Length: 293
Image (cartoon, rainbow, N blue to C red; front, side, top):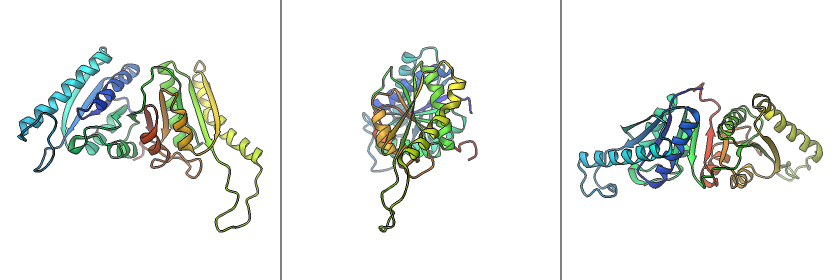
């Protein structure tokens, strides 16, 4: 995996300063530098100006961007004074600017909402697009930031789920937290579409198969991290709902960007996107194919 800086995208909003604090703490835990990036789109006629700006000369927008960076650097220094911090204003829209950072980043951190307009880190825009196309894990700061609680990871037995488990185990070990692996599953429908013959299956056998998927998925973690408290949970229900419920007590939720699909899949646009919108704690999305893009 890339061992670059922790990168955080800011837009001057209170939520992006929350993201800076989280990113600084992550950088300290990882022993990495912190890079703060503000994507600046030069305004055109009829756009809304940033707070406090009454005219639209280039110098005014640049000065406002520099103020955002100064505030972010101060927040980072207060959170983790031992971390080396650099900052930069990069011309361009947030998504391409931040995606350009991901090949060299150890982690990209974003707030779940921002100022909106041309500078905003808009949920459903920047967060989802960077989680979909970024070349490093993306941590979206949303919900409640908790200093305690487990790191929870969604498991479905897929290859990307295995990467999410590895990431979650490292995070739990760094934080001194327990790791909880959750496998959400559902029984097949009683009938097939079109009122075909009911499916025949053994509920106990199906449950045993699903549990084996979960146990085998986390077996390697127990070997690599013998001191790490690890527990697993089998929960019947839709993955998005189950993991959102588990996020209410977690300090971090980790999912892969996509999985097997169907009832077990961790698919960006379904489970991962659901958590980015509705998770009750920060959510990390780990891509499965970032090294091969």
